[in-house]
Image (cartoon, rainbow, N blue to C red; front, side, top):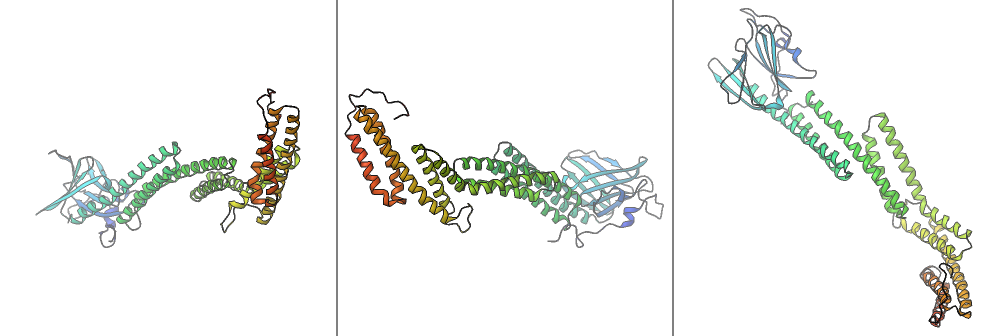
Length: 448
């Protein structure tokens, strides 16, 4: 369907009528006294249809009232009804000593009617505020009425869509304050859909748009971008906090995903930003996320190697075993993180990590076995001196250390498994052979 204002549907307005001024005589047409009709038009406003009368002027009343207020032109001047792409402009020449004008936005037009008679016709526009504007004319008023009716519907659609967009933005603001950023982004998308619909309604009026409608839509779109930026930055900050918590808990993959969401949000915000200071701020935040991601991708192997180094620096066998176990878990996590993925995210050479797993597993088994042996010797000494409670504590330490190491040996150091389980069973026999019922010797905490 062709736009309402087009070469097929609009009459156009005579330039002489738009630019004319001065008083008319018996054989000539009068216009306006102070300034031409064109001077009343806003920048970019498009005149569409013009009608005039020489004596009757313009009438105004309220819905339900029988009284009409008349504004008539002075002698030799005229009254004009100019329909533009934005409003109905009523201008009366030299009324009560000067030109008078009235403006009815098309978005306020609710009803358009007209009547015809032998000496001409009259159209009536009823507004949302219950005002009625009457304009008589001997010219054909059909095109004017049809245009006002159709154009007002397009303008009403534009305004309704923009009102709905405003409501969605208010909801988005509320959700941002509540830190419900995903819901806020959904509300922003609703607002964007409404402005898109407003654009379509605007194009139904004229294919190239309407300046006044474009200005309104662009103001709302600017608000949308500001709210959208707030939502994106808020969600990105939330995801960064979440990523850091997950990183501390060694949830590397989930932390990576959270950083990825923050990165996407900052990139989306950056793509829409046009203010220099905002762009600079977003670029700084995006760079910080990228540095954090790079550090996270190194973290599993780095933490494993750090724990392995610390294990080699301590003489405490129990602490060394714990650090080796931590290092082993980190190395194994590093192997599993990108399992099945074509593109690796986390750093580390797979073969080197596998070698480290085998080496650290062997060191862990040997450390725990040596620790257990020392605890058994200490337990034997306590047992020989009659301190059976202390002996039992030492044996339990040895038994627990060996038992905790069996799964690692079974999977990664199978050659040591039999000796390890035999030693565990021997320690269990020692525990069963103890009678601690007559031993009241206190067992110092942490000094078995």
